[in-house]
Length: 170
Image (cartoon, rainbow, N blue to C red; front, side, top):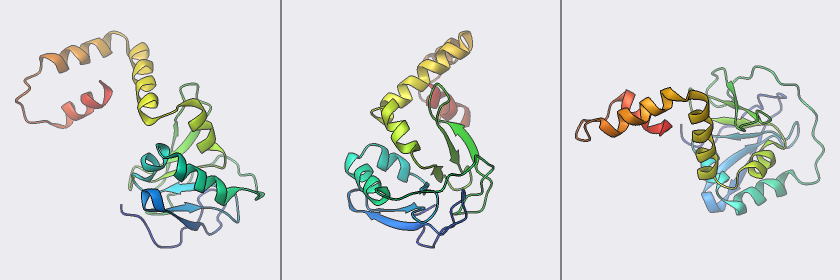
């Protein structure tokens, strides 16, 4: 889903979200400045922000000096497309939980979660590598079998859904 220009309603506290234009990544980021301080990223915006310290600094500057009301974890609805959001752990120890929309690819982070994620992983690549290590440890023999399948599969085959899934895990 492309960058939404409509005013979004915060899925955590129900307040209108403000749009902050981040020049470096050429995106409008939705921030709940008058409510809970949550952040909503349209599809692919999160990856653009994650690797860009200047963009993160601009988001922090918009949040600086404000008092935000606390919110309780709850089932949330995507402010962009209206689908139910799914809670996912983004840290290996389970300390950071964000809301993902599997309909449009949006992500919602509660106030302070971006800082927690950045403190744990310096880059998206480092995060991905740690996730792969975690999966290898949890899956054990199954991971080895998937890796062996990938190495022996015919490289001239047209990629299919199963190959795409396997490639994401290896």
